[in-house]
Image (spheres, one colour):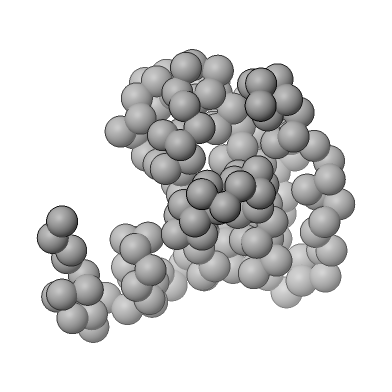
Length: 154
């Protein structure tokens, strides 16, 4: 898929149409407008060139408006899709928003979805104690988790 097609797909309004807004009041959700998300140029430019730099939207990533723009900026700067999404992380309290964000960032490709499933988690970011994005319970501290699952040796 060409980069222009990827950008069109990522910015498509179909993603916001999938969201029902039924829990917006309960979760206190505010969705970043697309026009505002596209103003990420204030970030350090190295973030968009270096595949070792990580980005996390921990204030509630919603359906991924900000993360999509980071992904697009990285792709435009020559990073390949796998490297670009491998270091993009998000947290949201709403399971529907998390599902849409994962689907959106992965472009429904199973190999990318597995990464997004690990990197985009459903949790209350104000209560997270474990920011490892490794499948362990985000509400447990390192003391609550056995060392063999907290530290993997590869």
